[in-house]
Length: 186
Ligand code: GAR
Image 1 (cartoon, rainbow, N blue to C red):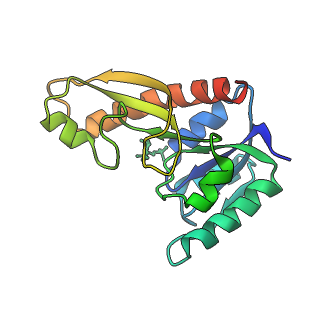
Image 2: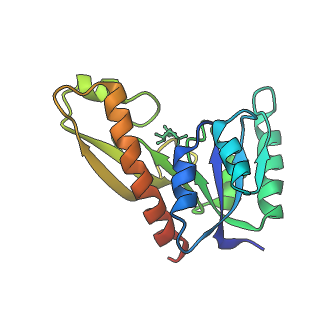
């Protein structure tokens, strides 16, 4: 039985957004932290905080095989909502279809502008004045699903991709828990 208020957070790396979602959990329970990288830094933090974890190396594993195994782990923990938090792997249509409308992602740009990876430098080069982050529903098309919330960051004259990334990350940590809390009760 899938309970919308039981959330799985999917990570591939340090998991700073995962941490924000755990620390600011309001109206939802973090039922599982799942990762496609065995050495994801966020896993250690999750274990230290007595959270349930599941990890499997996706490199060298068939796309659907990985997704099937992860799906079984999600079901085992009665997960009803999935929050991608720096999960750097494209999910298969086999996985997305039955979870349609229940998978969220955070992306470091004001979608629909700048989909994909490494977009801070192109945005600075293009003379953009404002950047930010978006929480959106995951569909088969990359970074293209319904936008649930956004937060803006003004680009300063001396910003580099690194300083911008850091400032946006800080804003992500405020936006994502707020949007997820609203999402699980809608
Ligand atoms: C975050 O900036 C997140 O928006 C981005 O990866 C970073 C993960 O950091 N996600 C994407 O670019 C997804 N396309 P974290 O592991 O510290 O949360």
